Length: 362
Ligand code: F6P
Image (cartoon, rainbow, N blue to C red; front, side, top):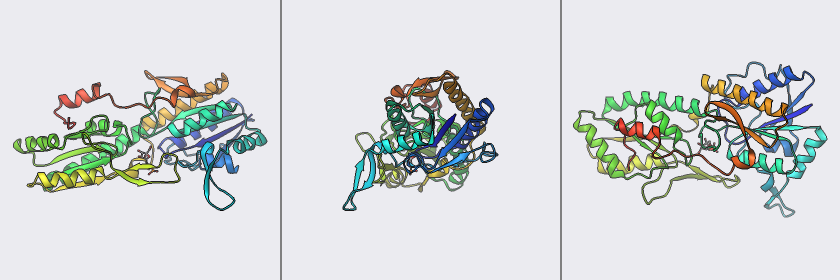
């Protein structure tokens, strides 16, 4: 049996843990099984660029951050940028080249570790007859049909830990700090880390904010003798009636918008109103994605790898492993990509935060 594995989209802590576990589990199940790791996501499938994954080459990577297979959030083979005869970039469906490469290599099963973009392509390869299994990853935790994605817990821990650090310096200087975190259009990282890290205000895309409500909270804390405040904001958050702040357009990416800058904008706007405080912003950026996975993410990765192994054993292809009510389960890739998962503004965690007096700017 020959199995291909690839990692696509933004990297997330836990990718190597899944690779590590898959290789061990597949080899223990079928010692003759050959495992091919395609490099840099789907690009590796197209270019036939791969490494053989063995017990030796994957030894010791359970706790390693990033992905030994490299990743890319640019290479959608169904809409791939190639040079035409005049040297201009044009989009072309090159998926058949990848399929031929896999067939020539004798790949019977393709395991895809990724988020929404990567899994959409996984679905499209499945529709073309490839035996695909998806494994959900993203620090943003915004994938529908799974309660959690690996990478998310690590990101939350990193943000919560950094909020502790920001607290002591903010308090020492009576400053207001706006801490921008990742998550795109989903506020999961800000919400959980904001709660765990004792933020005073949490601004998320699901709850458009009003700046005067944030000011109200700062003043309330001043009256209590708390002359500093911590505001956590998701990169994709919006002011009521406003737009998200775009940090960068990555033109050769299928999803070209990269958020960034809302923290600095809020800090600037706040300082014009809250005159008796200095307001600073800090964007935690890719620090949230780097480094070792948390123990919880390692365990989730092992559980997902085991779920994927069982789907292979049962030949349930065209599926993604998922977590439902703390049980490992699976769903069709057809369903997964249609439904992103957002924070419920009336959900338990938001209510807990509000009961603690944390403001959401609404
Ligand atoms: O989806 C994961 C994520 O880290 C988002 O939170 C963030 O908006 C995006 O990827 C950043 O992408 P890039 O690494 O291309 O800047």
